[in-house]
Amino acid sequence: RPHILSGMQPTSDSLHLGNYLGAQINWVRMQEGFTPYFCVVDLHALTVSPDPALLRERSYATAAQYLAGGVDPARSAVFVQSHVREHAELAWVLNCITGFGEAGRMTQFKDKAGKRGNDNTSVGLFTYPILMAADILLYDAQYVPVGEDQRQHLELTRNLAQRFNSRFGETFVVPEPYIPEGTARVMSLQDPTKKMSKSDENANASINMLDETKKNTKKIKSAVTDLDNLVAFDVENKPGIANLLRIHSAISGESIETLVERFAGENRYGALKTEVAEVVASVQGPFRERYLEFMADRGELDRILADGAARAREIAAPTLARAYDAVGLVPAT
Ligand code: TYM
Image 1 (cartoon, protein in one colour):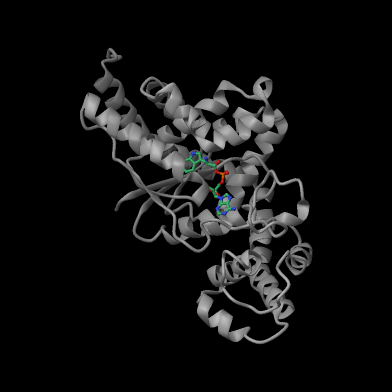
Image 2: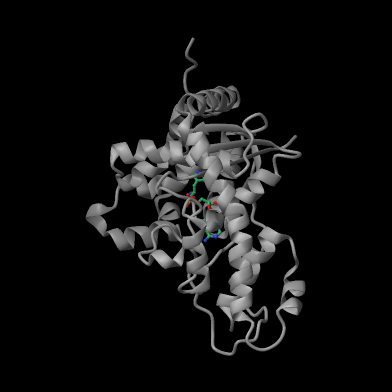
């Protein structure tokens, strides 16, 4: 069974619909046929100096949301990144084969650093994608299920794996991104030319998986669309409607063509929105309830995370040992 690895940052209280449809839905599906590793990347969250108590709480909350969304700890190793120290150790080795310019070309870094300014930009934010490469390479992951915004980081990971292998001998599996079209980029409800994002200041732009369904229904009904009121799938000219159709289709399983046919005719935007809201509520309501159950039993959550970390270490430790050996570090006896 090929391995897969993915992770999310514990930098918000709730996952949004983009995290859920862009990544998590595929994690859950891939539990059939793959050996999955899913980590809460708490070390990555440190790059933006979170409040310590909030970081800890959000790390638990993120793990609970993995489970609430259908990640099954019997089949998947669910763990916290900092519990497996090999992540930080391999990241150091990879730091030393990454070019400064190469890291500087990462567009997510440039965006974030641009917004934060030099003095608030940590070196950790700069090397963030290299830690991400370590996350992936430690597990011999063949596929990495993520949203479109991670594609460039995956490209860097592949380059580092290939560079390491050619310089030091076959050590790492070269991973491939797994980014199915459709919901690879769920868009903001308020500006459908921008992706849905945790950091959006406009609270109406995102559907939070942990909000009351009523609140989300309201947001979907006030989603920005266009003026001609004819439902069609046209990403260029009708990005708001295209986003709603994609969301519906990803959850309901109905094809976009069928939806467009069903909502043909004048003035059906309201009807489409009502149905999208129902479809979203059908997954989001139960998600929220399961989340509350998992959060109510910290002992059980700790047990799941400890078990996940133990399973993760079983593969991470030998991979790191292989890499240390390959670069010529003296074996610890
Ligand atoms: P993060 O925490 O920002 O996002 C988690 C996942 O959600 C996806 N995503 C989206 N997909 C579709 N539409 C959107 N609007 C949208 N917004 C977010 C992201 O692509 C991601 O899959 N660097 C990663 C975390 C990470 C990681 C890893 C991922 C660290 N190490 C190793 C995979 C493998 C990140 O910041 O994701």
